[in-house]
Image (tube, rainbow, N blue to C red; front, side):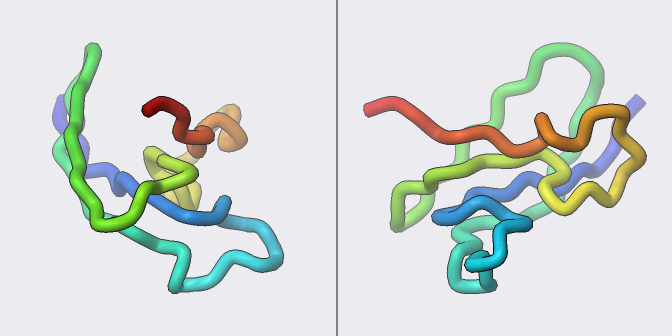
Length: 73
């Protein structure tokens, strides 16, 4: 099964009071299949948060895990 699901990269966490459109570095729908996936996205600024279905458009038992802090070098 293939679904197109939105992937987003942000400088602030969506849903917070201070979040606005300037915090969106990248937002695009990608074809996602079952099993492990690897998507590489290059942006001009370093994202602080990344999300799959970040705006919770799909029904999800735990929508709190759609966005994660980005860590690394």
